[in-house]
Length: 226
Ligand code: ARG
Image (cartoon, rainbow, N blue to C red; front, side, top):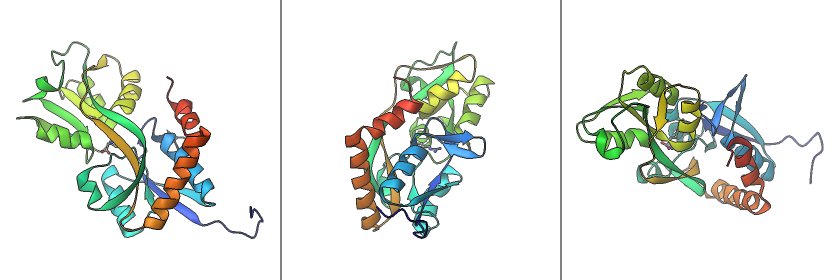
């Protein structure tokens, strides 16, 4: 391979929202996590240099669409709506939406959420689900952890959020629990600009290589203990 100093690598710009541990979060000045590591490994496969741009979650698709970023990697669930604006690579993880409540809450599952005050991260699939719940009042936060703090402070009744960040957040906030009964299963994938088939195919090849070599599992295991 060409590793001479003169070969300046092309940059792969990743848009993310680093408020979503263990997928992306801040460690000092750096954005780290499963998505950051996967994107770095993909970039390496493509002979490119990864650059991460941290932004609001609901700006990521626009960034990818406008070419401001090449990829969106943010624990982003593949949805019909999003597929109208971006293309997605093959999926690299499955996830569930879970409910976080106070330890002494009477809420035991999705059916108890009707008419309740529900916190979500703005623009996420949790936001969509909460919006569908009968008579629910949806409070939208810029960061998932802010919603978790609000339920802890008794400002809202529950939070609907992805399972892995839920575990991380509940670990850091006393008096909360995650309900056993979860919402639907979802799939995470990397977003690319609509019609950018070349990049999409190259990323899919890289992802397949990382799956086959065990590197993907290794990255996940670094951040999620089984
Ligand atoms: N999986 C959810 C979605 O796609 C939440 C993702 C939030 N990601 C983030 N980096 N904040 O809507």
